[in-house]
Length: 252
Ligand SMILES: Nc1nc2c(c(=O)[nH]1)N[C@H]1C(S)=C(S)[C@@H](COP(=O)(O)O)O[C@H]1N2
Ligand SMILES: [Mo]
Image (cartoon, rainbow, N blue to C red):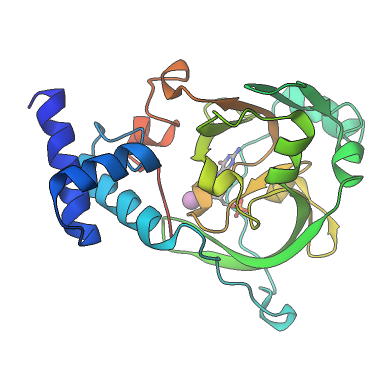
């Protein structure tokens, strides 16, 4: 299938799912609102695009479910945490005072945030679920600064389309669209259940997107890049996930 016919097929699918009349209208909407995910040529192709397109059309502003204190999981299941690298251990030994979250790309003021600087901004707490694609989940209270605030601080360009974020762990990087980046529940977290965020759960700094599956909530993040071009990163599919068979968009 040529790229053009695949694209047409995708757009037809979006039209059918969203119940829109007329291909032309659908095509314009898909282009305008960026309803074609970066991994549309990936393993899941059409299906992923339908999920992404329809969710984006129908629930752009929806909120992930928030829970009460009583529902916080008693013993949160930790993902197996890979043995920290020597690099990471050095930061940990110094209580992460040297940790930096670098934010650059399409921003007016590239900035290196210390954990303390992140903590100095208006914080938000939310009790949400981490849902792993393997079927298990846990509920915890997360504390951090909305990513939208960080984007304000650095002066993110209005032409930006995606926010990429990277872990100190090699091969753990993801991206999200601006609808998620500006969403009030998307947090750069440094606290969990009333304490500092422990290393087991991604400390000192972890991205939390409760509207998507757990793998989008990357732990130990040390870099954020604001961009309009997915091609610059890895194989150009938007994140490492589609390179290994998982969907870029993992909305729940
Ligand atoms: N850096 C990094 N982030 C990561 C992972 C990881 O192995 N390394 N695992 C992901 C997956 S698949 C899930 S389901 C969640 C698990 O969150 P938890 O470790 O708090 O249980 O973290 C995500 N973030
Ligand atoms: Mo997962």
